[in-house]
Length: 289
Image 1 (cartoon, rainbow, N blue to C red):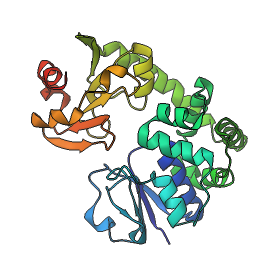
Image 2 (image 1 turned 90 degrees about the horizontal axis):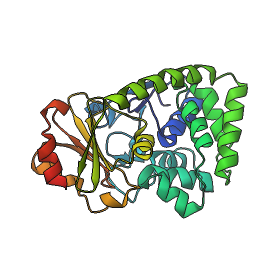
Image 3 (image 1 turned 60 degrees about the horizontal axis):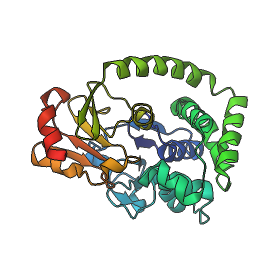
């Protein structure tokens, strides 16, 4: 019996969101706890009543530890959990899309599986991800569980959205989105954008998460340096993977100058162990570009 479901702050990806909701469905009394991905309490790793979802950098199904960030060859946490806890053997096209998008980015998932990206469907996804899983996780998990074997992503996201709306679970998210839109626009207005050669670089004293992809699309920015969303004393450097200009930018080079906290396995995100104010903008640009 799982007593605690542990993941990172406010799931904003279908991977961990669906995984948590399904775990909550089958363990309704379990508490959902959020932690910094690299600061999982040591005692949680060996406690089988604690399920680690997308955090901890360990994949140990016998101990209920389901992270995949340490190994690019591992499926996303959702699929690992579905396989090892629920015995799912059939991976639908929808699950493949979620898996590839989480590991390699939405663009690659779209191209590889032929799924057309629709702004309207992305808005549906945003609303869904703002549902409070501590309060409604079991209901949300049931909706997802009954749709896991669908192959048409567009039909799937609309079906899930319609069913969640019928349960009255989207009213609060819509209000949250209104407030988030206001905050996002205020943040964007404060962003400093510099041109370094032909590369467009943005600096933000506030995190733009979870709207990095949107920011890149709207501003044509290639590289973003911002305050880390999970720890205000850390700084994130993020590549726009849709930009041809970032293909040869090696973010790991920043660790020659700044302490390393985290480097995403795909190389699009580096987290530095210094505050945003401590980053020398000119120096970091020279290192990377």
